[in-house]
Length: 288
Image (cartoon, rainbow, N blue to C red; front, side, top):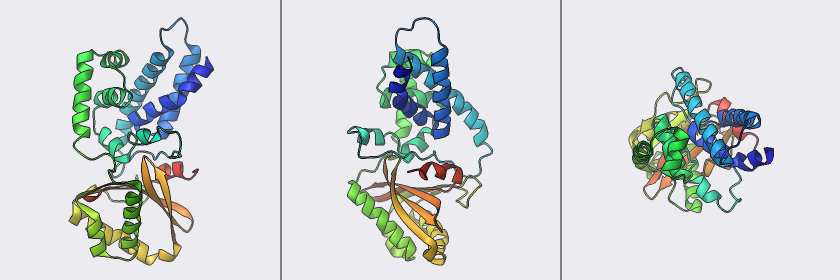
């Protein structure tokens, strides 16, 4: 019986993480699911259906709890970063596209039911009849929920559309511009619709709002990052790191990880900049 659960663990964790945006919550959900799996009695028609239903419903319960905690969260919120070796398995590219920061941020704006229906149907390929059974709703209702979620997701780019080499080169150019206080070079990299989203959680200095538009984002970078890198350049080191579906950059100050940058990039330039500064979230990257 434990073998069945262990064989499903990665898929179940992926489901919980996409719904909650939280590694810690997802681990708690899997532990609770495992305990229920061991304690269950009677015969079930499908092990996978049972496990998926339990994890989904536990994740939805966690969302409700998180919404209450979020009311006291200081500043914008970003998901806990997820690192995975991107050279295996062969299907990881497809996996990467459904754990990007941009997608998780948008899904956090959906209702719990919209998020679950969209993830189960569009990302995990469950039929609407199966989604209906998991969510205890009608198939028609689940179809509408997924459709609303899909429409909201499609309003913003959720993945980088440039080759990895170009994505990496743009990141390098971004940090070269910020370290050299090169305003002109910075503007050439930013899309007119760029969004800058930082998360300090009240435990690290970060923007208290989301900055949008080339002028607004460039102004904040010039006032904050230019100054930071210029004053403390000798104490700062950078390390490229792949997390949440794309190459990013880790920034260390005196050997301590202080910021994890993640980007969405397309042909118009850098569309999203995500700066994780909350140490409670950064610790998920210190083990990789």
